[in-house]
Image (cartoon, rainbow, N blue to C red; front, side, top):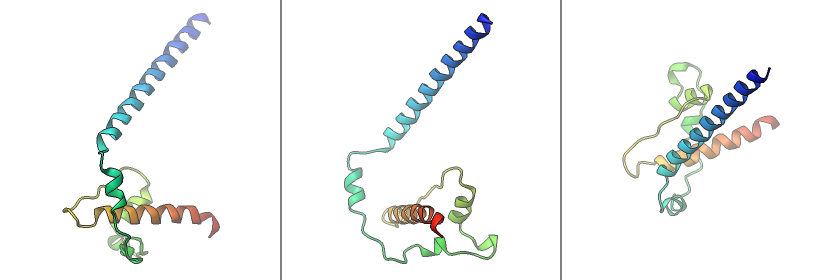
Amino acid sequence: MQLQAQHSAKLQEAINTLSKRAVAQEQKVLESLTFAARPVRHATIQEAHSKTFQWVFDAKTDEKSSTALARWLETESGIFWISGKPSSGKSTFSETSLLTICLQKRLTPFQ
C-alpha cells in the first residue's frame, strides 16, 4: 500500500511538472505574439459598416455554399487562420467576426 502511495505521489508530481511546463510554453508563445504597439493598433481599427462581412454569417442551404468560417464554427476545434495583404481588412474581419460570434453565443439561451 505504501509503495502504491509513493508511485501515486511521484506520478502526480510528474503531472504537475508537465502541466507547469506546458503553461510556461503557452505563455512564451502568447508573449511572442504581442508587440508594444498592439493596443495602439487595436484602437486605430475603424468601426465597420453594420453589414460588413455579413455574408460570413448568412445561413446556407447546402454544404458547398457554406463559408469556411461557418464550417469551422460548427466543428468548434482548431485554429481559423486569416491571412491577406496589408490593409485588406483582416483586423476588421477578426474584430467583427469575434464580436458577432460572442454576441450570438450570449444571446442563444434567450432565443
